[in-house]
Structure formats: C-alpha cells, structure tokens
Image 1 (cartoon, helix red, strand yellow):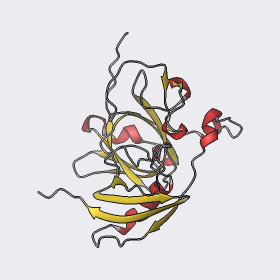
Image 2: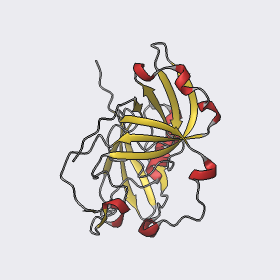
Image 3: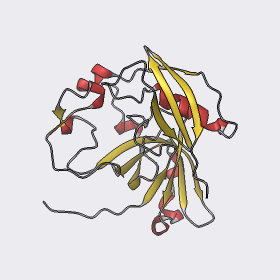
Length: 232
C-alpha cells in the first residue's frame, strides 16, 4: 500500500490526559476549552487571516492513542455494548485503515503567544491532550449542515445525558472554571456500553485531577476528586 507523509501542524492541549472520559463526539461537552498550539513553522499570522470570521472549525487529527494493528473490516462500537460488529466505514471507531479523525469545534479565540506560536482556543473538542493535528478548516453552515440527514444505527444509541451529583467536596486547588466542562463530560456517561454495575467505582482524569464516580440508573455521583499533579 502506498504511504503518504502528512505534516503535523499543531498539537491539542486539553484537560483529557487519558482516553477514558473523553466525550465520544465533538460538541457534547461544549464548556470544555482546549488549545490548538501550532508548530513554529506554521505559526505565520497571515495563515490565519480571515479565520476570525468563522464560528466553528473542522479539526483533522490523528488517533495517537491507538496501537497499530492489522486492518479489520468490522469493529465493535462500545456504545452498542461491545457485542455487535459493524463495518469500520459505518463507524467512527479509531481502529481504521488510517488513524485519521475529524471533529467540529467552536472557535473562541485566536492569539499569538510570547514564543511566537499561534494558538486557537476552541470549545467542544473530543481530543486527548497532546494529540497531533494535521489540518484546520472552516465550518461552512450553508454546505456542512444537513438538517434532514439520517444517522443510521447510531440513532439507536443516542447519547443520553446523566444527572451529575457531587457528593464530595472539590479540592481547594480545583479551578472553578473547569467545573462546567467536567460536569458536561461526566453527563455524557464515560462508561462503555457493556459496563453498568452500580456498585463499581470508575476513575477518569480531567486536567490534573482524578475523578472517582459511580453510576446508578440515570444518575452519576462523584465520590472523590484527587489532585494528581506531578511535582517537580
């Protein structure tokens, strides 16, 4: 198979340091802010001229957290319980012939940092911290939006929002501006579809904090929030 090289133009900085807990689609955790930090080679202000006029962007990025494996024509989507196989091209599974992904995010701010790097602050991204970004394109409502589109088997398992309760107190160091994004990410139910034991405690990382939670019926309860920042 012919191989093409694709340049990494930027990396994402997001509060999701691990795969578990990342919203399964972009736009589900609208309050979560991330930063697209461009490599110096591509941090040319002229390359961003006119971008401020768009509300949303497409990010083309790499499934960097997925181990390389041979091509499989079918996959097991977690939201279907992990026991139903679907054609890989009918899913957004990270296990693909090419580890490319596409996300639509809202553009919040464009700025140039002191070191000369250009940075886009975006909301609603579903990318793990450090993910390589291959390209950025403007979202065009007149052609990219299709109100009558059909969602196939994915409509069988539309994302249900859980009620999120904080039974524990947050550490004094927890930034309050992160709370809306954390609450939205948790409400999307981070668990795979085949894990639903109410007595089980789940753990996910959000920024520098480990979040412990349980789920019963349609309620997610946060039972402990622990700072895990590496000192040094």
